[in-house]
Image (cartoon, rainbow, N blue to C red; front, side, top):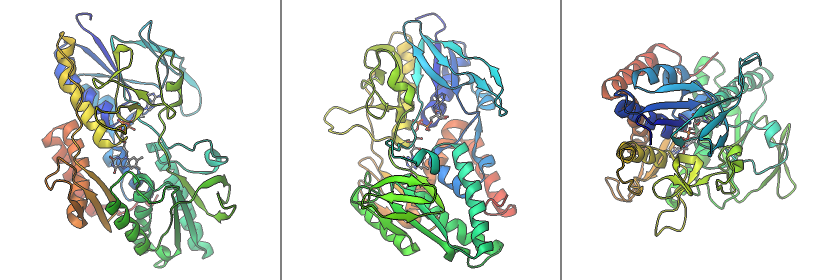
Length: 430
Ligand SMILES: Cc1cc2nc3c(=O)[nH]c(=O)nc-3n(C[C@H](O)[C@H](O)[C@H](O)COP(=O)(O)OP(=O)(O)OC[C@H]3O[C@@H](n4cnc5c(N)ncnc54)[C@H](O)[C@@H]3O)c2cc1C
């Protein structure tokens, strides 16, 4: 290892930005390592809040972290760029050309050299090649997609009011994204009633499709049952055990050959890491393009390359299933590497990653929240709901903010948000 190793982290999401912040503070500031973060976006957002950006119930401007500013405060470099390949022999990350919004190529394809590479590229929904989905459905996997959906939603809501017609929304995939988005849309239209048409909420007809026998299949059964009951209570249709086989411009086609008409369609099913990961020479990947890692979080046959968060897959000893792609896993893996990587660079050992299950929470906007607190939770494995569950869910984001900014700045951000909440519209209106 060179005297000043070059650590390159690709992907500044939940795992990557936390790790870059910690390594920048520990190693970058003192010159013990050169830490570089590469992301195709210029801003970071806590991904589990994307459905609120999509619904327009939160202001993106108040929630995003600007990489360039954050990097300069925490001793690392930020480079905008989209990774499209990796040459492990030459130890370089290959980046695509960088284009201006007009499409003009600003910088051609380039490479970035590394001594240690950490892949934290996240994931997106998986349409499993279902015909028409790519063309006709919205995805809520990035800030840009959430904003595009929000724009379409505002136009469709306006159309519904002016033409006195229903607003038919269909969501495929009843994981956390689909379920939380459904509830948030209902809440949005309740709030919107105070800005114009008092009947606007009653115009919303929403259907949630799930191929598994129950919604929130990765959560404990009581969380699924309570969430489904809550969604039905709000007036939504939940169709479990239903396969969507194609998307048309005006709705979904189902496995029983029926057609379900919709004005807005969202695809929130499945998980898939970026496609290029399946084509890196000599590096293994699974059917979802995720990279298998050892318990040290290093890829199978290369000690210089690590992968963490949703783009990786790890089955811990004694477990039958790999760790789920969740914010909790991504955070703990970043914390693990932040703790042990500096020692490993000095020749120390790299202990195995151990996951502490703090439970799983799902928030149905202001209506309710449900969850369990896991084996390490305060109430071991207990089922929680209501205000306490809502607060626990909100705390996950506040903890993330605190981990990135420190207690003082996180509190200042929270206070600014509360003050803005008093003076700004409660939903996005333009
Ligand atoms: C709407 C929604 C709600 C969710 N709710 C929950 C929840 O309640 N609880 C929970 O535990 N999990 C939830 N999740 C899942 C959770 O957000 C993910 O598990 C988590 O974000 C994974 O973190 P990560 O660091 O691996 O990836 P991400 O946070 O997705 O970050 C990946 C980063 O990589 C960048 N990137 C991607 N490709 C490239 C490339 N080729 N080149 C350069 N940069 C690239 C992206 O811009 C992004 O910044 C939710 C997800 C969504 C979409």
